[in-house]
Image (cartoon, rainbow, N blue to C red; front, side):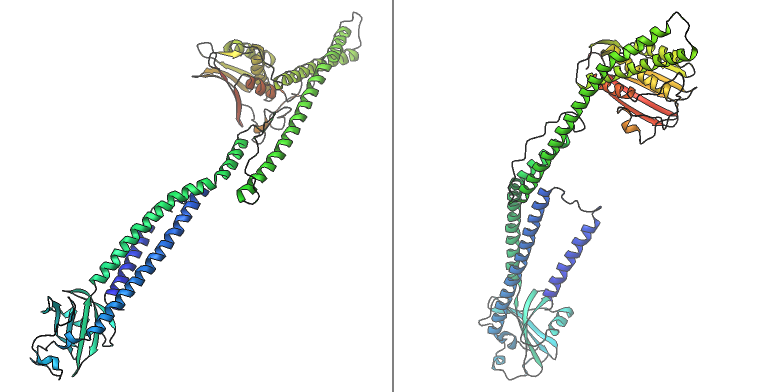
Length: 518
């Protein structure tokens, strides 16, 4: 191929390079669809676009080849008569003996409109004309045109060329007599117009087909993936359930369980998993209920014997007769430990009642007064600590159980007192915000290890490893229930409690709804 075909190929290659450069100039990577629905729809459209592109390229090439073959056939039928009838300008007469050259005018009989003819003498174009309105019109040739005509091989085959004054032509070159080369050509405009018209029609049809297929494909994919959406909705519902404790009502099974489909297999597997999880949660809940009942029953049963032991110890210490010192010491220890055991029993009973969801008293409680009372008790219990109290100018009131809320404040102060060394500064702060009251207890002690903080509010959690504490004669170690009671009472009042800690700074924060907002 030559001329126009090479130019057309070069143009298409240039446009491809420009498209690649434009894609590379885009910022970052092109966003890819994330959902399965979008990926399936996009893949379907890409496959359809590739198929349309392949069909379009094949049909355009086939049509172009067919039209070129027709032009070549017309050129073969013309048999170079028009070119052979042209005279050399240099000689003024014809050098060969062809009868057509006896006539001074070129032979335009039977030639199609726009037929091009040229004669070359020893590779130099001496005459060029086209057929127009049954006559001939000379064609001015530039140097580039002459080089283009001279470059056409005289092999009797069709070649594409471009002339400055005529445009694209399909020409055939044949050798004449005496060193002549005869060129006959037909315009390519009709071929290119037909090919471009086909390209426009295919672009419109294929574009409409892609749009319609995209809409219909998106609807079909959405319809086909609806069972998968139900599976995902069920799984999402499970993830939103509080599975950590308590009785959990699992969602119903997924209806799509056809083992012949992939979605049905996923649905069946999810149903089996939900069944196993539901059974495990039911067994766990039953075990928790048995444990709660046991703790409540055991605590209730222990109250009487512990109270009896405590009463007998107090009675023996009040005996009017002298008691040996070692016996008195033993009785004092019995009294002390029985009091400690009574406190533990009461804590366990309180937690059992909170777990059972028994309602607490509901009244307006002044947190500032509770803070004053709790701070006064803390100063009396640990005068070696530095106690600071920060209260707002106006009272801060919440709705709840005054006795239990006082227990929250006292437990937080007692926790700071027990787990920090002397001379530690403990600050109790009360603040009122837009819709909640905030109570914070901070200290300058050694802090809580980071790995222990997530479980600090669980029952029987001990922080002895990190925070200094003194146990011995006249002192007690914690039971690990104080912060658990804080968390349970706060939750029963629709509040929250959290902790942040690092060496030298530990803060417990309790948030409760203000009176009238809960």
